Amino acid sequence: MLQFKYSSLIDAPVEVVWNFHERPDILQILTPPWQPVEIVRREGGLNVGAITEFRIVLGPFPVRWVARHIECEKNRLFTDRQISGPMESWVHRHLFAEENGKTKLTDQIDYEIPGGFIAELLLEWWVNARLTDMFRYRHEVTKRECEK
View 1: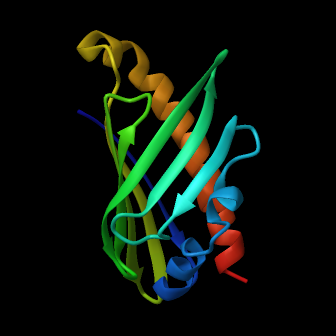
View 2: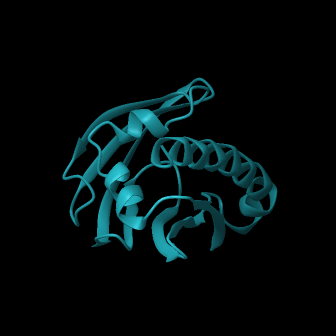
C-alpha cells in the first residue's frame, strides 16, 4: 500500500473551510485546468453514501472513476473510496483540524497501483508527482477562497 499526504494551513476557521467543500460546484472549482477530467455526476454532497463519477482521459483512453463516501464527520473529515476506476485500491481522507483559529487541511491517500509491486516501484514517483501538483493547486484555491 502506498501513501500520499499533502497539508496546508488555511487562515480561516474550520467551519469556513468545511462549508467551502460542501459547495455543489466544488469539484469544478478544485479541478486543475490542465487535468483531463470531466465530472459526470455528484450525488449526496459530503455525506456517507455520496457518489462521485469522473471521466478521466489517460493517454488515448477514457477511464471511468467512481468513488463513494464511506465516512463523514462534519468539520472534521470525510473519506471517499474508489469503487470503480484505474487504481487497484484508493482511499482518500480529507482532514480538517483547528490550529489557533486556522484550519490545517490535509489530504491523505492510501492507494495501490494495478500490476503489483513492480508497477508500484516504477510508477509511485510519477503518481505522487501528479498528486502533488493537483493538491498544491486545490489547496491554493481553497486558501484564496476561504481567506477572503
